[in-house]
Image (cartoon, rainbow over all chains, first blue to last red; front, top):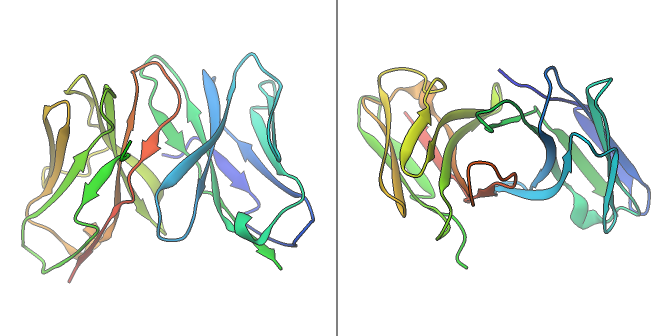
Length: 111
Length: 114
């Protein structure tokens, strides 16, 4: 079963705009990660936020984590056409440390 | 580093045939994961290994699926006999150690069972 659920399922924006994707999960976590998948390719790790962190930045990416609401958001600022991809959140929970992926958000950035 | 290497990239086979998917993890990585991706079910964890030992295979759909990791640099996922509902993209991923976060994915093996 999927631990994380992304919202929205699909998002279409203009180049230069910001894109925000949300992830909700069900159980306590060790950390939460975001991945990107280009069409026909494997997933690529973007950023990891630990359960005791609230916000993290990496380049144009900003991730927030609210453990009380069991939710996270990924913000991509000043989007580019090359950002077009599917974005997945993944939760690392329990002693087994396996990653469970959400259903993903398909982001389309129009030039 | 070459990254996680999977083969074949594409496989088309007929129902009832045996399918073997292969994975070479990143050198030095101690954990290996097999995922399956479909439109209907998204990314599902099938099985993962720590130090070549299977830790959790509860995601393996049924007895037709089996996975092995005979050494630190090689793993196989076998489906025998294959069925049309097994059609999916199968991903292998590795990470440095059992308690570190980031997974490194291969490019996947797209399986079509006719």
